[in-house]
Image (cartoon, rainbow, N blue to C red; front, side, top):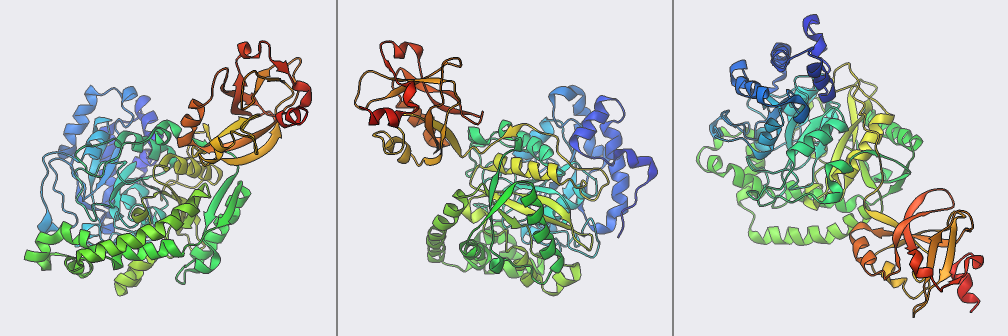
Length: 610
């Protein structure tokens, strides 16, 4: 089904946050007009089954009126339309979770929703979903299967189906979904969007109907990583009402997002463990993706996907289905016919597993987790296809459980391992359908992953969803890995020297043996043991000094620096290649009466002479 637009409303088709804010700032548009345009355009897609409740002008009026008290320049989402998956509360509007018999009307909005509204965002509606967020395909709803933005015959992906399709078709600038098994990533892939699955607890789950409460994440669909970072920065925050909420550490704050620079080592799945379930188009797209990324400075290291896959199977084949049972228990016990048949078939057995099954599964996950996290620690991120195959609606309805399970091959392990991830659109297949990848990292690596995704989007631009405008992010602030900090050592911390243990026992790794720029003088300081040198900058009389650069885990850098005695300290040192790195320097007062040893060109050479 092709996408056609009314000429009178074409001006609003660039729904990116920057584009809309520019329109507002220049007086070329108003939020009221944008919302009316959205309602008109939504009529063209009624048969896509995007909405459970699309808001009327009267229902939006309270938020539109509220913009008069909110200056545009201090409210980053002023007038920006967004969509809410209908298992997340919006005050005064029914929450159904895709089940009419379950519906209730909340008095207050979910914490995340309220924070977005406080920043000026305007809700457009509550989006269709796989009932009780149980599914990855978008066909499991009594409100109708939600159809793909590019081809009506294909699934949209679920469970956050309407959330993704609404953004892809330009009916919102961003949307909220949820993700337990892949629901914030699969729909992003199938609709050419960025899908952010944050670390568990980074976004409050207060006001969210749980699928699996211990695993659920509220997610963000957007056109590019700039928009995603902005929305995440507004939506995040510790919430003491949510038992799974966690404070965001400094190294994962919004200001850490930028354009990832330098070489990247990315983990990939070996060919014999890849599965495309007969989809040659997706297989070719994945192979082309790796080739393009290699040209952009990405290097690849194969990982063993077997432990990830074993963990993934536990999500639906193990005792975690009991959490889905808890969420829907009143209906299952009292009115089971109210639940969508396939959803009921999946979650009804969840009341049977004994507690012993859960503990056994947890033991197994922890055993496998050691292997998985060790592999992730060796690379900048893990890269997988987001999905192995894009099914038609007819195919999905014919084999609903089998094909849904196949959709989760690359996604189901994520939350059981407490990982962060972001789905990134990559290209169109030969048949004109979107294909994308997912970047995976450790807990609270969200901004690192978004910065890598930013690099991909800037190097390989695509359109915004199914629209004509380009989605390329604009943030070019260079950022590097926050996992480690490089430290230059020149004396007692060198390999084989008496204080090298202070690096090794903190998990530091030798990165390079090199020299400083020809701008330093070295002195043998008084005192000891151990003997120590002092390095002083002198651009006129200095020489190149042999040094080592060690990469120390960021969390251990502070304790390392705290052990350094005066007159030594850590400052910026220029290396022979012109780069600057944190390293040992000496206060000028410390070299009074010290022996200059610059002519030895290194500490070890000096030690050999005494």
